[in-house]
Image (tube, rainbow, N blue to C red; front, side, top):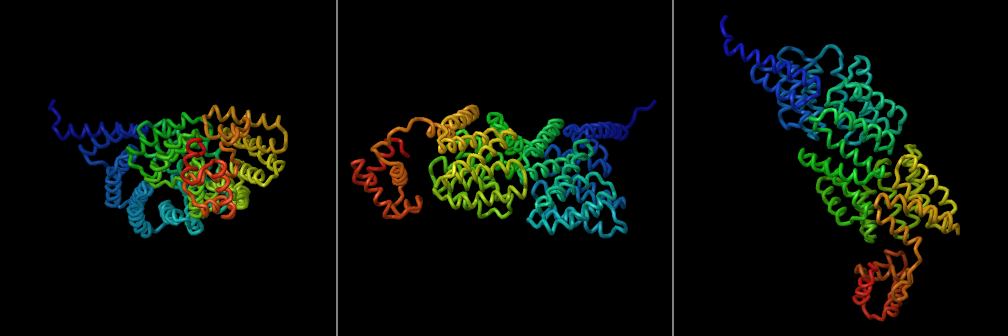
Length: 555
């Protein structure tokens, strides 16, 4: 018997690696699949369908150029064989991966290449649906939801007619998202939920499954549907955990998990997950997502009262392209920097055009305007929030509106009406397992009860809020409860509450005119307060008054 020659050995090796690569691919062992398919390709060039497997495996482990080289080779091989539909589909698959990475120009180049092929096809097929989907995507990204709708509706009809699973999942998410943005929530939510059945049953490859998960969770968050967002975040976490080699969606999953853990009051766990997300996304050089990870970390530090750490994380979020609002303005409010807080939240709110995006800033705007004594501006913002809450009709948004309106009514001296709304808010947040928001509602309900002269009810609300906030470690909010419940200490120098406000602003370097704007009073009134402060403290200059303020911890 003769020994096999070297070519025969190479073919045998290639065959072994190809079989192992296909098996690993089916098991979603992406690193193993990539290694074996690369070896098989080196020994004997892969066929087009195996090149597509190689591309997906390389994409799954987050290689930068290898996925697109393999997809390009597969595309050309399908063209060489005359398989026009497969060539077009390969072009569109590569475009989807590029869109997901934020590389818009190369993605549109591959859409154009696929378009030329599709336009030469004599009969309609799923590829026409993919072309419509990818033509509508840039319109959706630009906010032209009505323009995108026509493309997506037609693509959905094609996906249904040809029973194309991956197209059905992808178009279900984008069409559902657009319908939701156009206020057709019932149809939109039904579509996005239905399209996920194929994902959870493992019928869709990782590229389209990951895109579907992230699109769905973002859609849920856009409309404040936190229950649905929580359920799909847990599903995404299980999906990622079942594929240890998978990289592209793991960072997004960590961010979503952090948001949910923060809402649930598991702040130590949320901090650990946010730190893990920062590390993972920095390694991937996924800068946009990295900004969101730093923002989540900043939010945890702010809620705990660690202002320097929060300041640093908001700064880093901004460096990576994530607008640090509304958290940054709420931090300024906690620091007593009311002008900076007002400027930041007004800028963010003016830049938000869609109702759902404005709803993210309106609660903070209400809080900051009330702190500045701008009750009418706060009331107007609370009313706008109420309109959005009625439109989107999700519990969390209804709770935010009830809490904001309750705070406005308290400021207007109507504690009875405020109390009813604040109890509603507390009930909603408790049912949603959102302890921090529930505690804040109870704190305000305690204030309302106190204003109504019901000391016993006020004590119950304050004690319940204090227990939650102590467990969370929300130091700034605990200080608010102490200010409301502990016996008042006489002010240093015998200053009145308004004089203490004016002194704090003097210590910040504000002129009488600037103080009058800050407190919404006349400049003559401010001058009279300044004279009284100087007389009570026995000082003759703003510098000496500032020194007194710092010595007595008034700023």
